[in-house]
Amino acid sequence: MAKILVLTPRFPYPIEAGDTLRIYHICKQLSTEHSLTLLSLYESKNKINEGVEGGVFDKIERVYQPKWKSWINSLASFLTGNPLQIGYYKSKKFEIKIKNAIKKYDLALAHLVRTGQYLEKQDDVISVLEMTDALFMNYDRVIKTNHWGLKKIIYRIEKPRMEKYERETIQYFDLVSLVSDVDRKALLSSEKEAEEDGSVSVYTNGIDLSARPYSEPDPDEPPVIAFIGNMRTVHNRDACKYFAEQVLPRVRDRLPGTTFRIIGSAEERDVRALEQYEGVDVTGWVDSIPEAAQGTLCGIGVMRMGAGLQNKILEYMALGLPVIANERGLEGIQADPPQQVLLGATPQEVADHIVRLARDPEKRMRLSRAGRRFVEKNHQWEEALRPFVEDINALLEKETPTIE
Image 1 (spheres, rainbow, N blue to C red):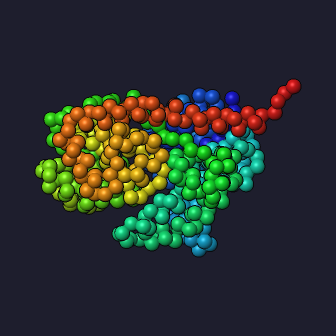
Image 2: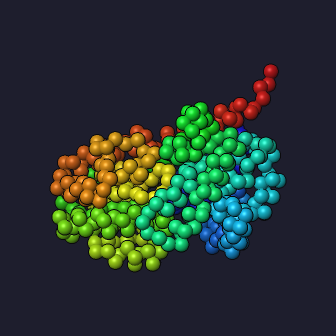
Image 3: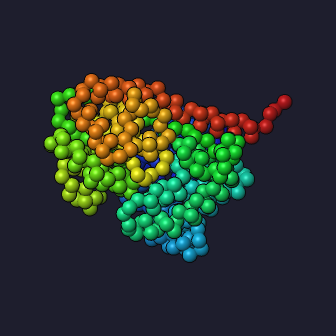
């Protein structure tokens, strides 16, 4: 049994967003064989003991850093030409904690480049970066959208800095974990490097099927289209705005009364902005996603921004919702269109898929069953993360001296 130090930029409880879900399940799988200590930054004292799950970490330590200090650090990074993201998560206290503890551990696992910065050039321990996705790719996609705003201006400055930083930082780790081969190829500078570099690897996401009971579609239900996602993220807000403006009116012209139900945490201003479109309903935070999605016609995964794997696609399939997505929405998911998902590149193609599903109950049923079988076979957490755990164990065994 090895001792593993896990570093996270935010306290990963309660488990809400996709990034906390992934690191939690990685740690849960590792904890079956090893002893884990969590060392986490946090910026809100109010939620510090909220929803902590037992049985994963043998020890939990936290370092408080108020937002005002993080913003000052970001400003300092901006002035020195470094990525704002890296500056925001700089903490002297956190750095000292790691420095004092690192030699006690066999391996250190950093969640995202935000904490990966503390393990760069670290020779005292095996270092692993759970990178998840390439941030610079997300910035690039935001820049290429049509609408302007402060965030787009910031991303224009941040993108080249982050691209340079991410390409360099992966060289310092014994293993780097990503969820999509698209991100891996973007990070590695050449086809030859992509073929030869085994330290940067792809490990897909999973989904907890026990918490998502499968139910077949009801052909008699009115047409309700679902979108599951945290509305605090720019890529989800953009996807919903795009759908409400470009796709929903085309559907409602042919299927009057069709509604677009957006399920996930949302600020009040975002609720107001989205519900100004006719036929849009924003639920906000819900206690049960399966209940909120009950009876919907299909799930939408048409994305213009974001990087890595979209967990919402797996959610839809697990719940028995036929999926309509574009190629960006399907990145990192090896589902076959049109047998397991429907692919739509334009607003008209997406609208046509929705109308056909509403008028063809048998097709809905086929896609529903095929999607559920797909996630059962390929995306249960234990199986999805098994290669990652095996590669970490191989690193540990390599560093363990043989006793003769």
